[in-house]
Image 1: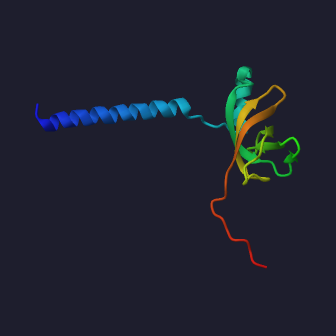
Image 2: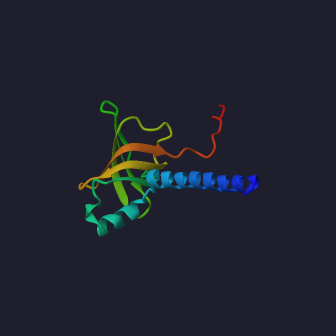
Image 3: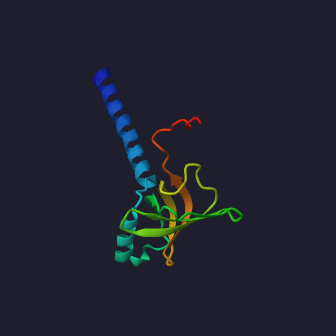
Length: 134
């Protein structure tokens, strides 16, 4: 076997190993987020889905945000237009969080129908504009 063939076989083995490690890492850590409608369907099919860690992606319902500054608690509702869930989050919300922003809520849905969030991610605007001058 000449040196070129050995190099090619070695390169294929290294690239294959790295590809396998990347794919298995993404499979273990990747988590798809559900929409509120998908979550409702999942609960209807499998009632044991309560208290399972998940991510829900939706839009904040305008006018539903209430803040308790002293307790650092944020309450709001999320919807995809079909289903709606209440969310309770303890902690500081992201700077870009406001009414009607798109969010990904990470937490657990309890039997009371409320998602108790451990993390809230708010979508930031695709562009920032300067404040209009008076």
